[in-house]
Amino acid sequence: MRGARPMRRGGVLGAAALCSLLAAPALAATEVIDIGRTTVVVRTVTGTLATQVRKLLINEDVRQSEVIATAPDAASEIQFVDGTKITIGPNARVTLDKFVYDPDPSKGAFFINLAEGVFRFVTGSMAHQSYSIQTPSGTIGVRGTTINVDSIVDVDGQKTIVCVDSGHAFGRALSGTIKDYFAGDCFSVTPRDVRNSTTGEVQRNVRDVALTDVTILAGLNPQAGPGNRPGPLQNFAVPQSPGLGNCISKSAPGGSCTVP
Image (tube, rainbow, N blue to C red; front, side, top):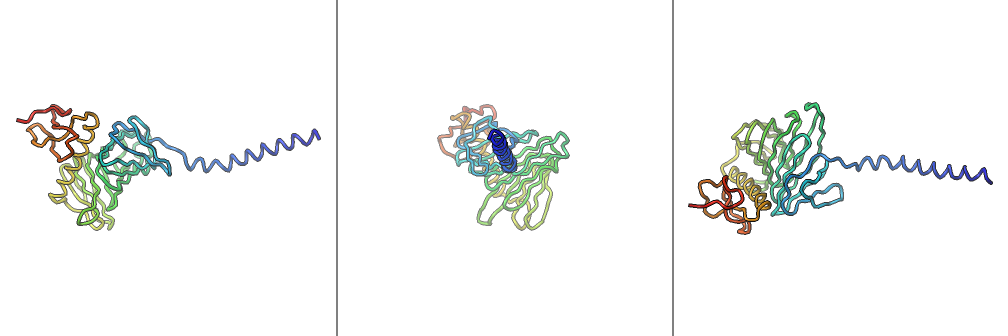
């Protein structure tokens, strides 16, 4: 009888060890990988990973494969491990598909998917070919660049409007058409083609980027907001809710500039 007890105990331990080994792949499959951190969060910004949804706060880690979404009056800025920064505007949805950081810049990879909305993208320390932005109408490649990207659907259908602030970027349509653009250029990617943006498309991009900026400023200072009569120092004037305040200028970003 005494000899049977250790055997039974050993059998239980063996079964527990076997269960742990069987569970290990499942745990690995759901591993959470932190790849960056929020530096600005205005109003409701959520992160969804698998079936888990959380409301993001400032200075909170973001994870690989997480879907970042902003409410109509919300915005956020995220800085990644390699120094890349993205500013996400209202009503946007971005998936952080893949982020691989390596001390050797040529071995890194950063793939994101902009489903809808506007965002600003500033490359970090990885090699330029490491960055790729997927949109419903095609792919945007960045080459040491600051770009403003606007994924929209209008009367012409799905398109992505890109304005290059600095550096070099290219657009690749779903059809395979690819074209290069440089600082000061604005281009539009549709599923069929890549072309220079129209005046209306450029104005749409500028407006949506301005709304992003004003949303962030309004979140940091409730008195900030566009004025009805822009003065000579104002960065922009976008029709928006009076709740955002009166005036934003380079000299008074908090909203206290004067209009002559």
